[in-house]
Length: 115
Image (tube, rainbow, N blue to C red; front, side):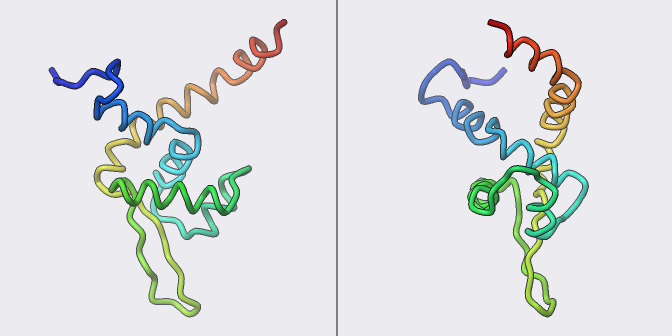
């Protein structure tokens, strides 16, 4: 049993939830679950994300050791992003959440439109 309590404002577990529970973090981690991707591939794959938001999300995930950035020795130079082992450990819960959202999207949309 952990000493952390997500109900406490200063709990490290709550900070962790803040990091990984936002929409773009979940989508990026899920998107990288199949293997490394170049920035442009991610941007094309993730509909609705701006380049600025993708950059911010990747930097945040990299700073928190969930994603690693690798410079490619190509011409022109490029980079790719991949999940770290820690990021891989997050993929299971994120995948379950993403699949749940896909399965219940219509139900939730119906409830949201009710008066």
